[in-house]
Amino acid sequence: MASVKTSPALDSKRVSSIANALRQRAAGFWLRTFFKFLIGLPLSFIAPALLACIIYAVIIRIDPKAQPNWLLLLSISSVLLIPIFYWLEWRTGGNYLVDEMRWQGTTVDHFYNSSAAGWEGRRDQATGAAYTEIFLWPTRQVMEAISGIRRRVRINGQQLHRGAEIIARLSVFEGGIPTANLRRADESQDDLLHILKYLQFHDWIDLSKTADRAWLLSTARKWLRS
Image (cartoon, rainbow, N blue to C red; front, side, top):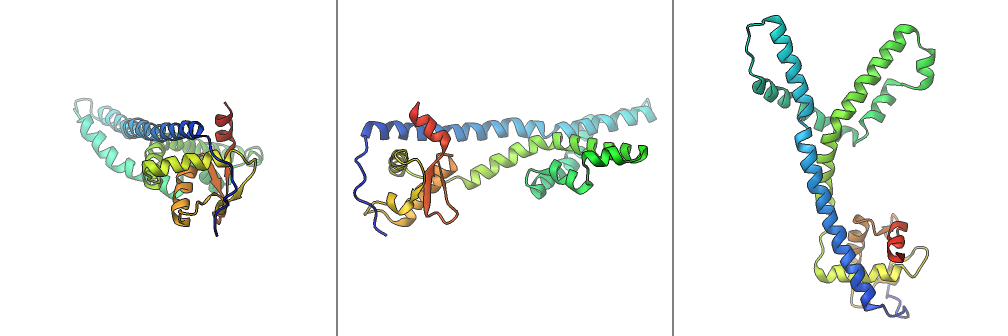
């Protein structure tokens, strides 16, 4: 479908300003990704370190003369726990606590209606799930960083400028418009969709399920009005 040719001319200064904002947001993505790795990787060893400390204390309690190698215990604990945490995070898609509570059938009514033994059992299960969720947080940061890198859309400078033009065009309309109305005569549908996917990834716009309509997100619209 041919693009609409009656759209108003764009302000070049406004487009340049939006293009700079696109670069800044892309840089922000890499900064967030870097900090997720920076925080997530070291903190992934907290649970193994705690387990190593517990095992170390147990060995000393059993044999006060023993001199266990804590670093060796940490290495063994890391080999055992870290793959399990990454598997749990991958299996639950970042919703471990919700899935675990649903599997346990834990609700407020269950707590109030349970016997004393049942209440303590459910409390212990919920506490264990809560601690596991805390230990999964560093793993989640790393996996989110990896997922973001895998899903990111790459564009060149010319495409980035075109993306700025699209945002400027969408800012004129309050609602969504057909993506065909955004396509230029010299632009293929696939090229346009690639740029739209980039803008969607960086939370500038959103697309319908069939990618036939696009609209500016409210956060982007607020930025443009500021």
